[in-house]
Amino acid sequence: MSYAIIGSGNVGAALAAQFARSQIPVGIANTRGPESIAPLASELGALVTPMSLIDALRANIIILAVPFRAHSLVAQAAPDWNGKIIIDAMNTYGVSPEELQGLASTEVVARAFPGASIVKTFNQLPAKLLAKDPAQDGGRRVMFVASNDEVASASAAKLVSDLGFAPINLGKITEGGALLGMGAPLILQNLIKLS
Ligand SMILES: NC(=O)c1ccc[n+]([C@@H]2O[C@H](COP(=O)([O-])OP(=O)(O)OC[C@H]3O[C@@H](n4cnc5c(N)ncnc54)[C@H](OP(=O)(O)O)[C@@H]3O)[C@@H](O)[C@H]2O)c1
Image 1 (cartoon, rainbow, N blue to C red):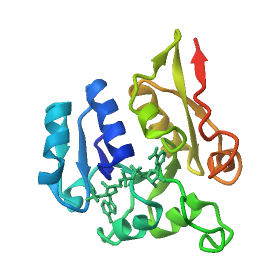
Image 2: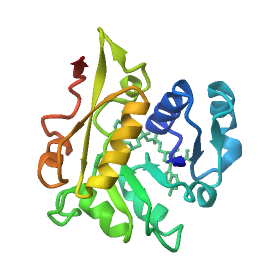
Image 3: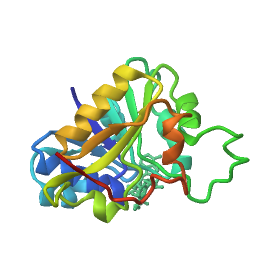
Image 4: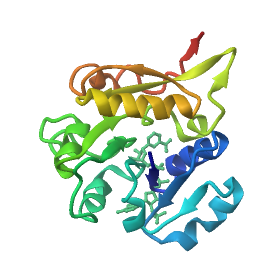
C-alpha cells in the first residue's frame, strides 16, 4: 500500500510527522512543488518524500489536507480515480451549508472523485495535537473513521492504527460520520482509548 498527503501546511506536516515517527513511507505534495517541501522532509527524514502533485496522486491511499474548496482542483489533476482511497481530512471553514447544497462535506468530496472510495478521518484534532505522539496516559489517542465503503474504511483504520492512534469506526458518512462535521460533537474532543 502506498500513501500520499496532499497539502504540506499545518495538517499535512502533522500527518507527515506521524508517518515518519511510525516508519511508514509517504509522499507529500502542495501547490508550490517539491522544493518547497524539502526543509520539512529533511527535518522528518528519508521516509517523507516531497513530490509533484501528479506523482503523489499515484499512491493507493491519498490524504486530502488542503483547504476544502481546493479538493476540486486536486480532483481535476488526475484523469481517473478508480480503485483509489481518498481520505478527507478537511473541514469546511468558511464554507456555507448552501455551498454544500445540503450534503455532508464528504459527500461533496465523493462527487468530485468518481470511482474512488472516500473515508473521513484525521479532521477532528487541531494540527498541533495531531502531530503529537498518540500514545498518552497509558492509552492511544482516538481517531474516528467514517465511510460508506467498509473495505476502504478498514484500510484507513489500519493506517490510523499503524500511525499509533486508536481507530473507532463510526459507520457511514451520513450516519455516525455526521458527528465529524464542523461543530459536531466529536470535533476537538481529544479522547484516549485505554487498552
Ligand atoms: N489547522 C488545523 O488545526 C486543522 C485541523 C483539522 C482539519 N483541518 C483542515 O485540514 C485542511 C488543511 O488545513 P491546514 O491548516 O493544514 O491548511 P494550510 O496550513 O493552509 O495548508 C494547506 C495546504 O494545502 C495546499 N494546497 C492548497 N491547494 C492545493 C492544491 N490545489 N493542490 C495541492 N495542494 C494544495 C497548500 O499548498 P501550498 O503550501 O503550496 O500553499 C498547503 O500546503 C483544511 O481543510 C482544514 O479545514 C485543519
